[in-house]
Length: 413
Image (cartoon, rainbow, N blue to C red; front, side, top):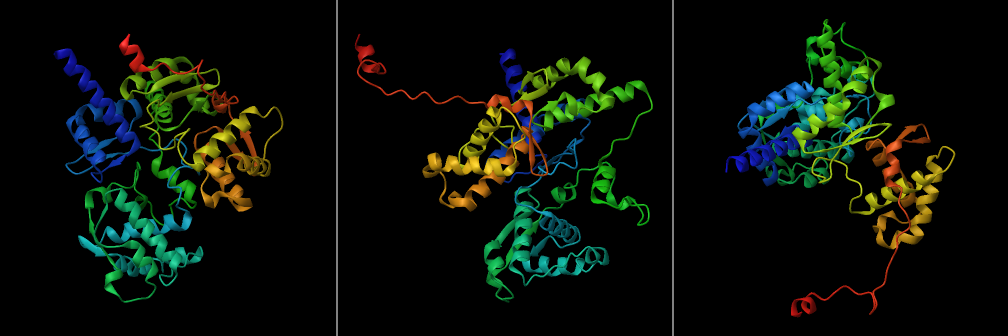
């Protein structure tokens, strides 16, 4: 009985770890998230200690949310974040958060729009060419998308109304086309995962570029002792193993390489024990694989047109014998593949424009999974792509001599 309880406890802890890795800001927005939050609260002491020890990530657990301050190893990686968000939409998202931080417990979408218009008059934003216009349907859609994202994070809870009606409303004063939100302060205050707050710099001392600013607010404090530096190396590598699809040897920082070479096996096994992931060690690098697919935000293979085309492109690139492929070559391959598989794909994926769109999606997905790297229009195939080198399918047709046994016949015997 005791062994069974211990087994269940280990399973729950691993499930809670994976839930926080998938949703670092965990709020009860779905039944699945509510169950995950229940497990996180139950094992909060263990989880705090585990994440602090293995990755140096703080964990805060409250009654209605949990926040793992997980920071990516590469803050300049363009494949992270919401795929539907561009720079402008992210800017509007930040303005919305700034308004909500000072708002009443309830706010309407139209009031949000009015208040971010006021913030958008900042001279720094105007000097960068950022001009907001709520009469423009694109900006209204950007605002609505930001609120939908905040709803998924548990920051906003729509009480009444529909965001799509607001987008289509134009300058209408019709209140029936507005949306009323509850604002959840706890998750809102926990959105930004950083070591140092952006407001702690004076205007003259603040880093100038966005990349420099992100690096500055997420940089770890550098220790002065050898033991401290080893801990930093271990946690830096652990973060990559927990957060990146694969860690290639040639991408490990020189300062971390010695530790990585000597300790990667033991470190990966320890992380696998805590997460339930599976270690895959190759001559080119190391990965924690997710056979169940419940700890991966991008799955491959997967269902749908985009995933099918991505798998076809992966196989095509894995079989390429020489040369550096470019987007145009891949686009031609996708167009050829459409002749064979197009009848199974969504209607919007047909034709020349469809091939161009599917090519961009496939390249983006493969880059997310660290199976290729992109330099301009050229593409470099990375070692892990070889696992998707597929053979031609062997299709067998049943006949009387090669049919599956009838279960009822076996039972009668």
